[in-house]
Length: 299
Image (cartoon, rainbow, N blue to C red; front, side):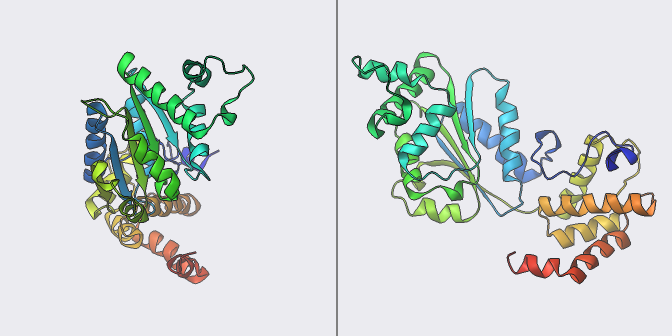
């Protein structure tokens, strides 16, 4: 039996997987999500979300996709690992993952093209034309909104960044044809600043910060309720929440890892809830094992 079922829960409450159903909308996350939705509806082009490791960028992107997916006017693609060796590799990926009928758009420019030509054989300039025609067809003719979400965007090469900048030039008199959302660690900012005329294309920019103590408390309570906890009292006592927040410094991922270990300790000790001593024992165990020292050294 899974440990969470022993506690009377239906699901694991503190998984670090980016499940949008367990996404706690802190004030900052709510503000970021609301602004992203507005930017996409208005087709304003480029939005950038920055945040340190573990601040909830990936889960925010999943929540954004969840909000848009059931709306038929949006065509979405998410890039999880955005390193591409060349501009052509990036464009080939977009043509493939947006399921663009490249032969249809390629044929409009090259009616005599041999039937055996495949997408990887098409040159860079033709790939640009194919993608631009796809955007025009979807956005102008069919009135759709094409959204490209790039997670871990700090991994983008300078060549890929430049290609994305060029794509932002595809526009009508009213709006951009491609809606681009970049989510990345803080070094993404310096990459953006190194590319001429890229920063001034950012319509919405926001930096996510760690959670406050109140937000940590509310997130723990929210995730327990989402997992099926039905009692009126808090399973995590106040002194335990304070120590969790202090140790994790408000970073959601670290909070969830501590909470997960605390729930396992509850089962092993047959306890009725998570108290400060239980959390302190977990932290001291990390100190004794040298794990916290490794974390601080960048392991």
